[in-house]
Image (tube, rainbow, N blue to C red):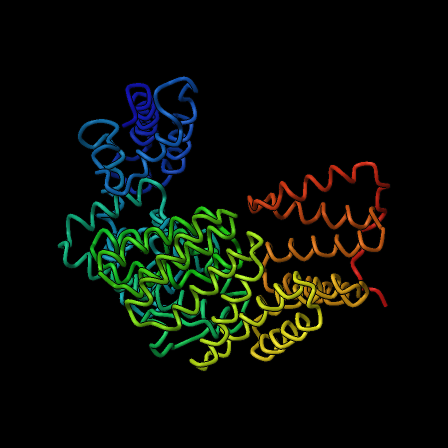
Length: 514
């Protein structure tokens, strides 16, 4: 709860906003008066919340959460009695809408996200896109929606709660659930299409991947952009589906977000999403889905270097995959456990696990999985000093991911190849491979991998006794790691501190040697 101070401040902001409406030349029921006052209401609310003393018993986050609680009733937002309230002004604007616009307003209140595009609105409204866009634009004209960008809309803060309240007043719970599920299925299908565009050969469980798709993302970058932009909405839908006990929908949405987490490394969201998916899969008693969510958690913990947590998740997932008689999942668990062993320095054990995973993928005729294992095997062999075997395995992996046009893993394979060449004493060849990897990672939008490659280029510079170039690469890598809250930031910072006395580089080297 807000507490006395928070309630008083919010009440002051709302009461002041009401005065703006009441003193308008028109009555408080006038839509024009509300339209003019609504931006002021948001400003005054922000002022009220921001004026909460720092040492009070309520934080700004608590105040905003209280105001934005999706279950809070609109009656909490009353600033006065009778017509002299924000609710009355919203009601006046709503009642002036034609029937089709009023219906659209109510149903859009069911959308759990903060913003949406025309395609999502059309799915929710069960309407054609052209007509849906006309309805949205009409609500913008009525100042009940605002247009963020061409084709993208959001509610004003108070109007969103009002629309939701109206949907609860005029539609049954069953009707609202039907609308929500129609919208959620659209988001799931679209997320699956984006995930497939980014990682076409990865194995999946969800039924959405097997369904015919009416459209694809024509450009790879747009798929990643869509997933990034819609991440909050996808999570809100997954949470709402879980509350509605549509657990199959919840974990499938999380599965469809994999390419986003892999490329952008949103660690906290990655873990939270898969914990939610795991809870849903448990409620559904779906062993394979539980294992899939645990595998996602294992990879997340690997990325934040919590190797004990990663090992535990992969170990439990392996047991579940075995119970589910799901060999492709078992191969994924072997891979995950191998990654843990490699990261913790147990190279022979890692090589054994990766080899078993490769053989299982080959037996299942899963070429992508086999190529991934060859990359892992190549990395371990390089660390063992078996450079020719390492380069051979890494080249095979690179050839596969180049052939299937999967830039993320193409960049990773090039980076591993460059590192192996450096360890073999082939500095010039390493630099060429790493510059190719850097270009590919940037095109793929894989920021963490870009930082890893910059760090590898720093190692090439160190090998060439060029501390200025090494520092330049490390500074760029550190900037990215820090922005991503990646654990490697501290390691890079430590090396930069060691290089503090090195001469400054006049220009960062960007081109590979001739």
